[in-house]
Amino acid sequence: MTDLSLLGWTPERAGELPPDCVPGRVARVDRGRLTVLTADGELRAHPGTALLGDTGAAVGDWVALRGELAVAVLPRRTAFTRVTAGRTSAAQVVAANLDAVLVVDALAGPQRLRRVERYLAVAWGSGATPVVVLTKADLCDDVPAAVQEVAESALGVDVLPVSSVSGAGVAEVAARIGPGRTAAMVGPSGVGKSSLANALLGAELIATSAIRESDGRGRHTTTARELHLLPGGGLLVDTPGMRELGLVDDEGIDTTYADVTELAQQCRFRDCGHRSEPGCAVAAAIAEGRLDPARYAAWRKLQAEARRQALRSDARARAAEHARVRALYRAYRAQPNRMR
Ligand code: GDP
Ligand code: ZN
View 1 (cartoon, rainbow, N blue to C red):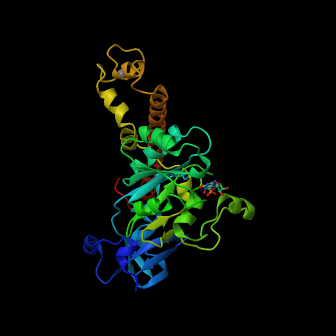
View 2 (tube, rainbow, N blue to C red; view 1 turned 90 degrees about the horizontal axis):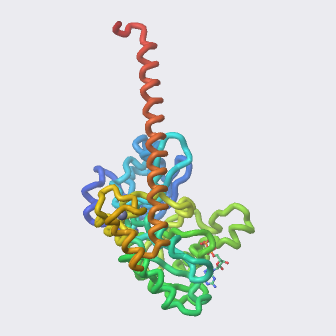
View 3 (tube, rainbow, N blue to C red; view 1 turned 60 degrees about the horizontal axis):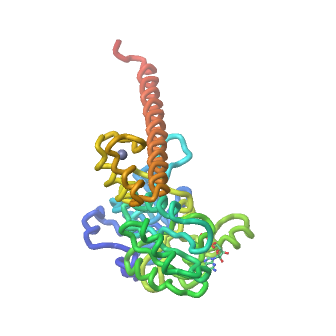
């Protein structure tokens, strides 16, 4: 028997479970099949009709199981979403019920501040708490200075240096996840996410980029699961969907750039474009060296992107709605005895 609390189960969830059901945590989603972790171990479950299509389960979801049938997805506390390529659904849940999102970047390599901000905006948008993890500390000459620089732009977020090679800092990252808590990693390719995952797991469960390239499939080597139990407690989601950058939403941007957001509210005009308007608090802060112009530019760029994404998903939702109405109308006209 596994103690369900180690899988992230919390007592108040008991009231959400339909009668005669046991809870299971989704560790992998394949076509029409779920790999689920339960108190009695791992099992393969079939999604019931309530779980088909857009209402389907994601990795990290709690499902209600009746035998091998998953009859319901329990309410999500947080959801990490991304835009899908498909026609109908605007956003797809990649991972559910995350407590923490590790925003991973490397201490070796090019300028990282804007990249971290971007991933932070996505992470905040999921509802989980972001933590910045800076890998490859063994390749950096001045770790405290580099951490400090990132901490200054990652407002209200802890920044942890780590080396998967020496193992330094791995325990501190593991402590942020902790028993019963669930974390996932986001960050650009090559920064060391898979290496960190393996260091956290104490085993080579996840193929690093070198292996991914050599087997050409970009798949995990030895395990089918995408939800892993850490030796010291805690769970780590590693789903390929998280590797692509998720949805940016306005709230995530506002939280990430809380300083800029607050300045913008002090501009004289409500619709200030922060260019050359009189009484612009943002322009004043830049002129006085209180705001990095690059940070301001990144904020603008991300806002524009969020707007484009919203328009795109709106257009998709509208198109789907039109198709539905047209189909209803055709069905109605096809009725032989319809009212005239
Ligand atoms: P991912 O694409 O983010 O999953 O990155 P990988 O884990 O595949 O790592 C990319 C490369 O960086 C590999 O060659 C790793 O060996 C290397 N690497 C990862 N972490 C570290 C680290 O902490 N220190 C050093 N020196 N190299 C690392
Ligand atoms: Zn302004």
